[in-house]
Amino acid sequence: MQQTIFVGNLPFSTTEAEIHNLFSQYGTVISVKLIADRETGRPRGFGFVEMEDAEANVAIDALNEMDFNGRPLRVNKAQERAPREDRGGGGGGGFRPPRGDRGGNDRRPPRRF
Image (cartoon, rainbow, N blue to C red):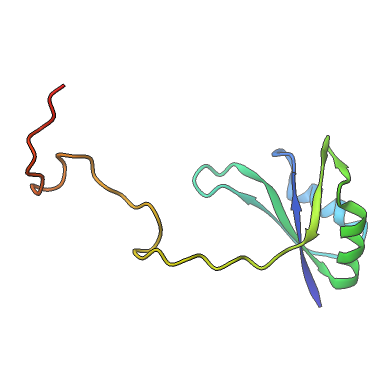
């Protein structure tokens, strides 16, 4: 059975190859996925490693709090992501055009500064 491991507090310069090499010391690494920001593409400082159960537990015990490029790693069994609450409309926020640009539905006079 496979287990997904959370790896946090990574330096932003970390590569998937570095994490693969680090974890492969404790067993066969099935996959490595470092997470990047959707909008900027910049690393977010965490990722996930997939390994077999027994090997994953050994890796977690060995690597949690280990110094990695000057930062103590946070390594533990990945938790299932909590379901996002439905906000309707396909997500939060949304686009709202600025005042005066609502297709003629704005009945207020323009602001004077």
